[in-house]
Image (cartoon, rainbow, N blue to C red):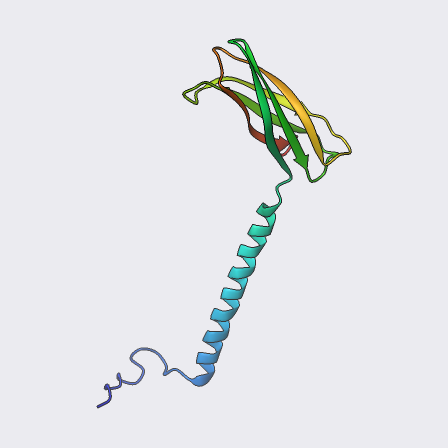
Length: 135
């Protein structure tokens, strides 16, 4: 037993093979464009223009903490800035400083920053880095 057909013209013209091919092609093209867009976004974000790695820190009592870190830039001729923070044992920020990273010729540079603290810090870390003029 087959389902009854709707009255002719009630829901628009009857589908044809040509219309089905056109719909499948449109959906395929849309899917391909969507995948290409996602890949493009992934490639843009896969290699940030500046990155950093915490190397170590040294606490100087209640007064300050010295933080050692590496900064890597895709274009070392562009200066950067990094925000360094000192945290206490409850992970509360007890000091912060923004450090200028001069333009250079090396892709990676080792940097040192001293952060003045309002109380004894238990760690010092790089919060973020950005290229000057792009942050």
